[in-house]
Length: 148
Image (cartoon, rainbow, N blue to C red; front, side, top):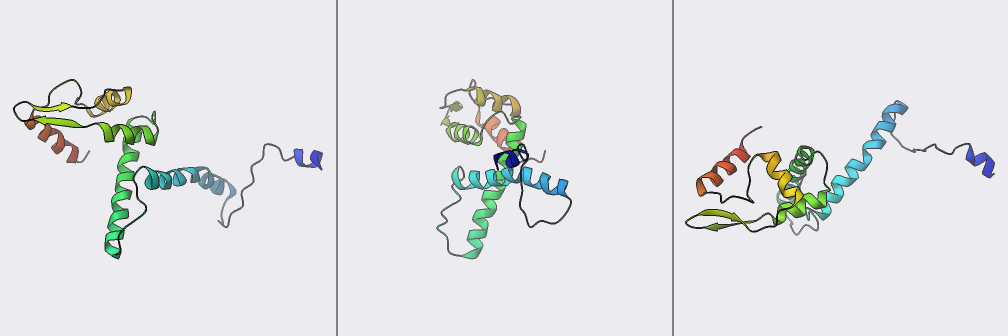
């Protein structure tokens, strides 16, 4: 029996109800992990669940916001050349806080890391080594809202 089974070593069996070309089904199955990862990120990193809403429109809005956040995250991940995990990126972004000093502007209150440096490089401005005047912060926020 063992000898009979060894002839299948190296093969990967897929059972599906999808109809179509075998190569197409294999490609779909290979990308399935990405879908699973998206659900995991939404549930864990974005705290999409549990939902404490009752009205259908609010529940839909909640998940739409989570989906948009996921899309923005995926675009950010691509800009970072997929060098970092979802947990690393989201944790770093949550920690990247600045403090507003009335006369001077904004100063960083977070610790620089390789990832914060890469984020600064990718987006073309620094929040870690310079005081950002209010006018420049407004410009950064405006630029972040422009279409790329």
